[in-house]
Length: 486
Image 1: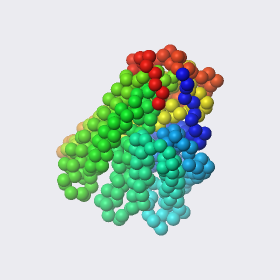
Image 2: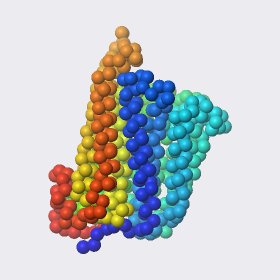
Image 3: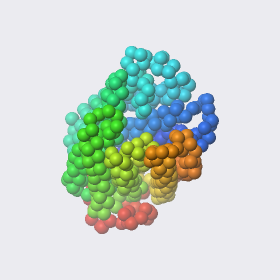
């Protein structure tokens, strides 16, 4: 039986994007641990890296490395789905360096200049777009992101147009085009605070709870098609149903951000109802992943990629679904909004839904980009350990932040008389903050274990007969003898 290596030479451009994504991912976690320590040691790194700058770098690195991951995934996936070479590999490489240099210069600007001075030097007075969380990038960087996004979308769209059209590639295109279009609202910064927050959520919410879910679904479906051998038609039907629910609940679920910012009161009903339904597509994704793995028609040698895929569906449901539902209803959100409960939901949702799906694609694609079907058994064992260590670290952080948030609500938000002040409340949360730091360090250990897996057993290529020798639990046990190649 033939094995799958690399089908199209132009897929190799994805490797640059994956390497950059992982490097920026490491930077994000290091800054995150620094932020956790600054909650406990307020003068740590001051005045060189104050808290507001560290937080800005932490969140901006998250966005940038995920975008690198999405683009690398598209450059790998689209040629294979379209059954043709990428329209312009040279354009993909040029855009990579433009994006990387622009991102690096932006981070250097954050770290070396006062934010107000950076705004002055980058022409913020021409079009005032800076100063909003997640969208702090200077105007030239935002314009650069638009240029890179348009070039990227042109490249992959032309590839799809000249080749085979599949449900996976079309859903991915829809998500990526939506990502680019929603980002244009970052240029809208009205003086009216209500409108400002509304347009801001058009970017932030409709990214992570709208079009990014389409990208998530497409990437997960692609990996499951390749690793399970289940009929593409079955996976396509699941994908269509999942994205339909994701768009319906995600778009109207934006209303849970409109509860108390000055918009009409009916948003409390719309936001509550449709936000309560947002866990449905994530639960469907969990059922989908388990169902496809159990029905697989062959045993793929890359068992680590399957573990990451199943982990994506489960932790995406827990973080974006369950932890989001905990405080999405307006009567509850009245007390919890902006507390550490929000931070707990945000950390687990990003990790479960988007961090893990990018790692899933990298785990599947990188061996083929290096000329092998899958990594060696030793490398995959280390990779699987890294999944569990990172997940345990994230779970520790999330449980600590959830406990801190509940106590914060009890001390600061609930009492009608004698409510504790913000800083006094923070002092009562120190125990939870120390646990969060422990979780962050654990996560960092798992992350570097994942990086180490790329350098273990590099010359050994697994055959499919060796796959059952790997660990991973019941869902990864050997499938029936039926074999099918996609």
